[in-house]
Image (cartoon, rainbow, N blue to C red; front, side):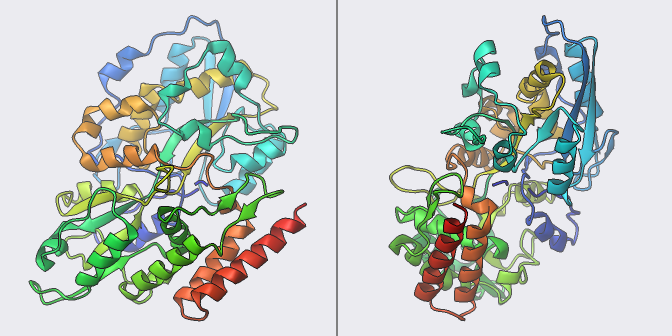
Amino acid sequence: MVNKKTKKWMVAGSLVTLLAVQALTGCGSKAVENKAAPSSETNAATKVSDKKMSGSLKVQLIGDFSMDDKTDPLSGKKIKGVSVLKKEFERIYPGTTLDFVLMGWDGYTQKTEAMLSSKGADVFQVPGIASWANQDLLEPLAPYIEKDKLDLGLYIDNQVEGWKAMGPKDKELQVYGLPFIGDTRFIAYDKKIFSDWGVEPLTKNPTPEEILEKAKKMTGTNPKTGKQNYGAFYAGADAADSVVNAAESYGGTWGKGFQFKGMEVNFNSPQMLKGLKWMNELNALSPKGALVKQGGEKWGTAANDIAIHIRVQPIFINTIYAAGLQDQYGVSQLFVNPDKKMGGMFAGSPYSIAKSSANKELAWEFLKFSSSEFFQKYMWDEQSAQFLPVIKSAMKWDSIQKSPHAQLELESMGKLWAPRYPYRSGQPRSILSTSVEEALLNKSTPEAALDKAQKESTDWLAAQK
């Protein structure tokens, strides 16, 4: 899901803050230095609209945004505030007024609900789109897409499909939002540690077995430095998602269904069991405390002691570039289902039009504006690399072409399951996470843990009918 998590941190000596950032969704990374403003080429590419629009528009924006310019905590450079977007939109649509309603991630769900109920904005950033669509609070976009003949192929594969949702009267998934923030997860590794141990670098698409085999070889006293190395590390809060991802590589899935009513889970499938046993072995090669976000303090620094991190957020790429460590760290893609070539975790944010908006036509124009190169480059260049672009043309940008790390991120986004995992936003995921944690702490066998998760989730889902 969303995705729902974004914060910034200082590179110098502040890995603790990085781990806090990684607990949030909807974040990304540009992996190159920030620019002072969107390029002149982008400015020139956006023409004044022929449509006669008028009126005012309020747009909600969640994250560490500012209307005014400020200093990027990573690079120390000045970055432009969202007033740049306001100015450009009002230039394209003369006679209109755009106002952003800026909001932090803390308590954003409750705040969004209050704003939707009070008609506080026309356009909303909705990583939790499924819930709002189900409450009939969002405008279906199919009529607007058809009217303007909008080519959804401009977006990276599966991004539009991943945010589809169902209204109370819908029989199948519909488009209620368009993506504007991209996000994904990937595997990262320390090339220096691999070299010290004489281990071949990870392949671009490693299997769980490759990860485990190489992690075992690099756990112990480093033959070059004499210091302790750990073969692996993982995001403790996402341990269950890592098990699911490993299960995907064995041909399994988490389950099926979109709404909780009628949803089925496969938490005790043979593939899931294989994934949990793999995770258990990997956990033994990780620092003690990995499950509770401890032991990874040196990760992402020159003094790193961890060979492989199996679940990294995009902002990691920007931190290593900002620190000049991009040559020390390599990246690989998360596991995918061998038949469908899909896998990983769908996250980010879409924009939706509030059903209560009094200016839906102008709101629709803003949704299209959010997919423009001007808007997407602004997010990429100016917002401390929090966000990944969601449009295919980004692959041609010089900043992406110069960064193999960034190219892999965008490639990974095209392989994410669509629609995104619905189970991630509710009780089934919480139940699975608790069971996985019990297994990793040796409080339960993998078999018993998954049987428990299956039964409790099935009972909970049955109660939703």
